[in-house]
Amino acid sequence: MTQLVMALVFIVAAVLVPPVFRVIYGRMPDTPGRKVARAVVQAVLGILAVFMVLSTSYVIVEHNQVGHLKRIYLGSDMAPGRIVAVPGEKGPQAEVLPPGFHFRLFVRVLFEFEEYPVVTVPEGRYAILTAKDGHTLREGQYLADAWPEGETERYLDALYFMGDGQESPRGQKGPQLTVLSPGEYRINRYLFDVDVEHEAIDIPAGFVGVVKSNVGEVFQGESIVPNSVVDALVTASRTDDGKMITRDEAHAQAILTLSVPLVPKGSRGVWVEVLTPGRYYFNEKAYQVTTVDTRIQTWQYTGGFKRRWVDLELAEDGRVHQKQREEEIPVPDSAADKAVVLRVEGWDVFLDSRILVQITPGNAPYVVASVGGMQQVEDKIISPTYRSVLRNVAGGSERKVLDLLYKRQMLEKLVEDAIIPEGMKAGLIIREIRFGDPVVPPELLVPAKRKQLAEQMEDTFLREKEAQLKRIDTEKARAEANRQDELMQAQIRKTAAAQIKEEQQLLGEGEKLKLAAIAEGQKAQLEVLGKEKTYELAKLKMILDAVVQNPDIVKVPRVMVTGEGGSLEGAAAVLGASTLTVGLLEPGAAKAEVVEPPAAPRPNPGASAPAPEGAQP
Image 1 (tube, one colour):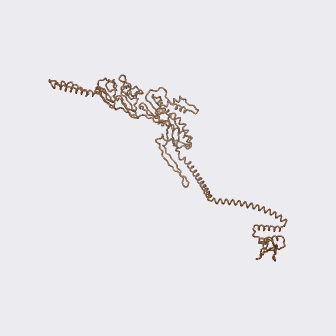
Image 2: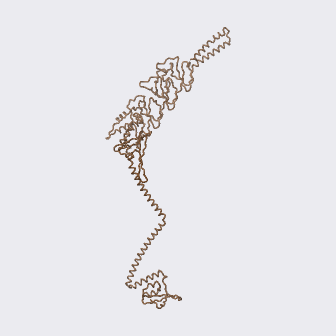
Image 3: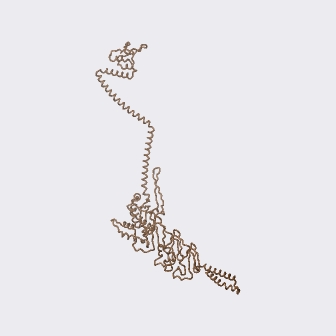
């Protein structure tokens, strides 16, 4: 406005230049110099006036700014209740100016010019818009209708949003359902408030997103229920006689468990269609997205009790001593809950266990619609049901405490069969149940431990005895190996002795037969020759055998044998007298005396020699 006043001043001054010159110079003739001076002054004043006018007729918008105009003069008033003006109306204009130079006559006079920074939505966030003008929301509506798909840029143009001045506004005032994803936007800040502090929804791998919509049309059909849930309800209804409810009855029963109806995408309720892994920009005022883990998960029930032990120690004298110890077992942060306590045979037995569960993508909307989420499923359905089933199956009156140790697989199977249908009713698949080590009162285990220890001691004694015997056998074998030569020689001698014994035995038997034969012959000879002749003949034979074996004992001296017997004297004479034959002769038989003359030559053995005088046969 100041520039426009100055322009008027300069224009008036330019018009007043000639009268001023006439006042100054009076009636003096108008010289060429004064004409030039007057023209120059008028030109300068005119240029200044034009400059002042031009300085009010342009604006420059920076590259990272958005130009906003607010009309003050020469316009009609806006309709009541309106906040943003269309062209020709006074007030905040729907039109915004992009970066650059903009010329409009008297723009700085008729309008108030402002700049607002470009709206930047960072990565991983989204912006919620609130329109200050537009159609009023319908009754019961708290968010404006979503902008038509693909027309977000057009609706961000405030002039288009307000109807281009030719018709009523296209958009609605109030919080907008449509959000702005990451990027830069030139937005009319007179029309929209922008809030960029909203995190995008990231669905990681192995998860799905279940959308609960608070906006949209009301679904007129019957609430949707997954077939797997209906099948589970039908199976769980089986009675002892095999009767089951119908699928329609199971469907109706499943609907009763839903706190929010399951509807198609776009309707109000929990959408049956889930969000697959990725990034999504959902208006948190309209949509509640629950991230559901579809991987197999492990829920542990452990800790929260005091564990006691009884240790057995074996003293040097063989006696067994007992010592007790205990430890407080806390509940881990990752556990679903503390261990389940069972009442068995009057004893409190704490049982650690774990459940492997999974929610399939198809069942995820039903889980959210019925109970709200995994934590609610765990707290409201699975944990209470699991504790009840476990106490009924593993802690019944017919159970024994040691069954938890020695019949674990059977009990796990029974609990699984009972809990799986209960999980399916909530859309949860229970894969398996596994028991940990039960905290059995140590007093019940001591007898078995002592028996086991005694058996182990007995087994150790037998093994040590066996080892000693093996050692003795080894030493014996080693000693035998070291005396192998002696043993072999002894074995050879033993074998030779056995052979000699056998030979002697055979010789004895032969000699026996020989003597028997000789005895028979002698008996026959005795009958023929008589007793004395037979005796003499036997002696002679012995002499002859001795001579054959020892020829050196036979000597032939010069002797004469005389006598009267006429029986063996001739034979004695032939053999010669010797110490061997002399002793064999009977008294009264011829005796021979050997005379060896010192110088006489040895006679011929075939010649006879005279007997010495006085010789006796």
